[in-house]
Image (cartoon, rainbow over all chains, first blue to last red; front, side):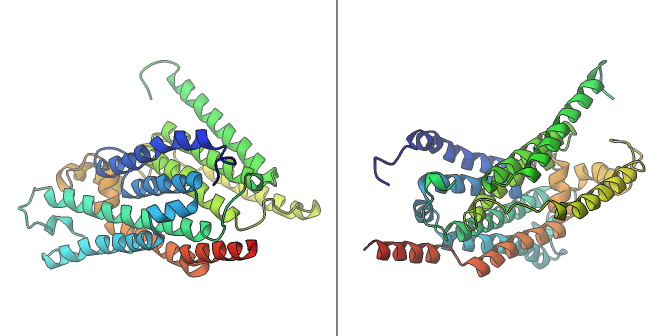
Length: 152
Length: 198
């Protein structure tokens, strides 16, 4: 976009420092999911929103260079695999599917399996949700080239 | 319910104000034709419902509503809106009579049904007895996680969450199958535009 037509300079300057903070808050929501409201699903949405905000303000092409669509759809599949994989891990350790108590073969009363099992499963949810949401957004936004201000 | 006089009245007032705002926004959305304004108002609707969920102590639901309803779905609806026209077709007056009757009848049935519902926060209600109290009593020794919602969501009902993740993934797959990956259509549309400019 040329210098003359860029009258969104205030929007860009204000949004630029906000985007990394939004993404960082997403990870806070994920890793704090055990103690406070939130978890992988909300964190995935927040991280996806930070990328979508970037693409709304700086254009879809720079966003696709920063976070390629091939990466987002692999991320979605990887997240689902992580969730399913934790279940298979519990199976291999001799427990039931998704039985986190069996993960580390700890004595009864230990909570490490539950703690890390929940964290890993939520990480899978985060990857799957963030990747899926961004893939959907790219599928929609990739079909319109550039939006003029009058079009809104 | 709470420690000091007037607190219940204040809570009731907050509920009435928030639900009144939701009602007004709902009417406004139904009467508008500009899709951009409708998408923005539906985002505001989600944000106000999230506020109301906080007021009734459902913090996790409120967080999800704010992240999904006001965040992601507003952005996705904006993206979808760009693929279609900017305004909705005006509705014929006579056509709206039957839907109005259906809506009034459904609303009356729902109001009639709420008379049988247990009071808000009733400890004897079916939702708060049986398995609900079980989760509250057993989570500290079973799971050892302070946030009960996370314990239920990820551990006790891990299969549900696995299915939900699958649904989100399947939704993304369906959109990709219908609309394409995005980068290829972007490249082809940019290419065709450059061709026209020459």
